[in-house]
Amino acid sequence: MSFYAAVRDRIVSDTVCVANLDTFNSVPALFQFRSHPDFTPDETPYIIVRRPNGDESQATFSQNSLRDILILVSIYAALPQNSTFNEKLETLAEQARSLFNKKSFRYSGKTYAASVTGPVAVPTEAENLLGLGLTLRLQFGG
Amino acid sequence: MGKVRSKSKINITVGKSFVLQKVVNGVNAAAQEGENAVIDMYSLPPERTGKKYSSLPNRSSAPGESPAPQSGQTRQGVAHVPARIIGGFVRAVVSSRSKLAVMLELGTEKMEPRPTVSKLRDDPVLRKRLLKAFARGARR
Image 1 (cartoon, rainbow over the protein chains, first blue to last red):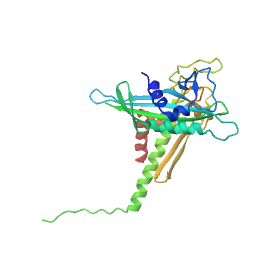
Image 2: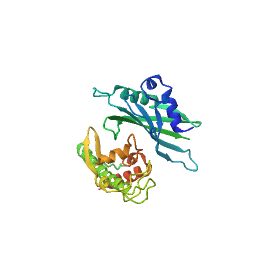
Image 3: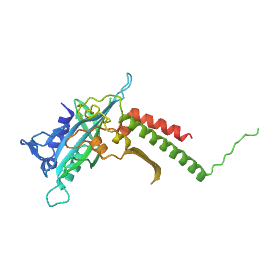
Image 4: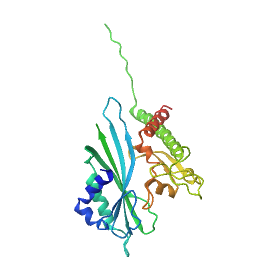
C-alpha cells in the first residue's frame, strides 16, 4: 500500500470531501504526483497527492527510529465564472485538513502521528486556476 | 564560624536588554547562514537527475530535488530580512524574490515541487547548521 492510497482512502471515505471533489472516469479526482493528461480542470476541485517531500530517519542502532515524512497535498479548481472566489475549494481544503490534523494515520502496519500545515495558497500556471496546499507531516517513533 | 557570602545584583531591565541583543545577533547569524544554505542548494553540484532540455545549459531537477541553476536569477533573488522583534518573537526571514522560486518550491498543477527554502525548516542537518550559526552569533 502506498502513502497515496492511504491518503486517498481517508479522503474518499469522507462525504463532505467527496461532495466537493471532481470525478475522473467515475472515480474521485485524486491523482498521484500529477493529473491525468485527459483530465480537464473545472470549478469543482481536484486533488494531487505529491510524493513525499521529505522522509527523514533519525534511527540509531540502539534507539527507536523516528521517521519524519512530509507529503504535499495540492487542491486545484478553476475560478467560477462571474465569481470572485471558489467556495468548494476552501471547503474541501479545510475538510481535508480536519481529516488529518492531530489524528493518527495507519500505514503499512505502523501508526503515524499526523499534523497539517495549511491550507496555504500554491501557485498555478493556468491563469484561471486557484490552488491551495496542505503539508501533511507524518511522524513515526519506534 | 563566619560565613562567606557573595551577593550579586542584576538589573533586570539591563539584563533583559543584554539577552535580547544576544538573541538578535544569533538570529541574524542564523538567517545569514540560511541564505547561504539556500544559495548552495540552488547551485551545482550535485548534478540534478531530471530532463536535459536543449535550450537550457544544465540538466533540470527531478521532483523533490532542489532546482538546477539555469540563468542564475532564482539564486540571485535569495536574500534575508534582518531580525526584528515582533510580538514577543525575534524573527528574520530567508526568502527568494523570484516568482519562479514559489512555483518551484510548491509545485504547480503541471509541475511537482522542488522544495528548497522549506528544507531550512524540515531538514535536520540544515536545522543543526542554523542552530550552530545562532550559537556563534549569540556569543558575539
